[in-house]
Image 1 (tube, rainbow, N blue to C red):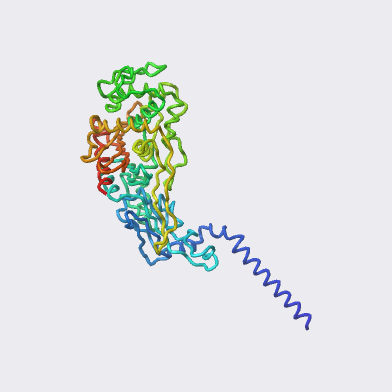
Image 2: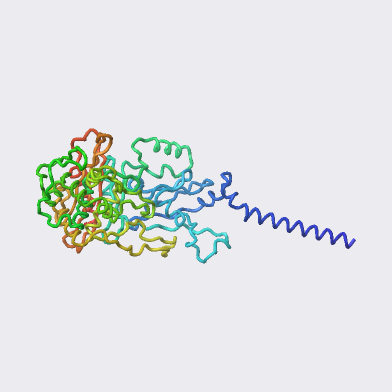
Length: 485
């Protein structure tokens, strides 16, 4: 009898061990498999059981959460959704997250271990942290000025603070309301299908995710390369540039929209955007010198994040001399995001120094205590300070005497550069209107804002498309908003 009890006890102990081993196998070894199984809704239910943290602009939340009372309880809401969509992105129960909603998802959802009161606290207790908040660098007045300035036209605006790299505005139009995608209903599916089928691509963030030929705004880079290399030493000396200019090794003659470009000085060529002068300057500097300057500004950089990725702006390093001439006036394979061109303007405004742009000022716990702060960003030297000083002079002349007159602001010093970029086979596409600029109030020690604007225009107004006409007034509105703040 005793032996039978002992055998039964051993058998029960083995069963208990087997049960513990199996439970460990399920909970530890097979945990990833079950977590990733589409039929497992527990992670989604847990994720949406509490409100999401907020994204803040100027101390005010531009996001929120709505209690639906369903299994996936809280849906994301947005204030002024279309205006802030290029910054917030969307947080959808069906389609995931984009932009800041994606880059800061761990903090906003409460999953970030940094939000726990103690290390491993949540692993031990099974508790969930309330979502944290993201404080952005965006200037609400500048964002509104950019959004309203673009109106219903396709285009984008990027504005940054030269001294710090803080992104002050990031706008892309046409836009969309990310709240339409927040839930998992049939209405969200219809909105998703409609937005993806829209030929105007309202969900495309043109400010950071699309590159354009920068056209004559790239002449800032070419001028910097020529001045730094000593190809040009006197802004007012004739450049010995023919008009038209025959591209090296070809019979192709490059011409100008403006008159008076024959042997024009750098100052005159910059103010009136002479293609012939800048194409020849680029050829004189050479591929190596032009590439070095372009890359110092940030071209060909795959790693720019704000914190979400920014598309790579490109300057072709394999061009021949004719292609180099076209590249040096922002055509051929030269392409840039609006944010990259804002960095070009900021480098000039910053005395030859540029800081990496960033969108997140700090992150907070639900109670308001600090999780992390952006801190000071290191700067890098793009060009010599003397070169930057000369470029400031040139850019100021464009607004005072040249093609950028519509960007002038009373009581402020404004520098700018217009551009009208051709594209398409045989330049058949509707040109893009560009303007890059910076502004310093008369009472300020240094420029407070650098802006890039691109307007895609339309076939209907093709003849009237120009950077000075379409883009400069938008830039002026953004600069005025920042200077008034």
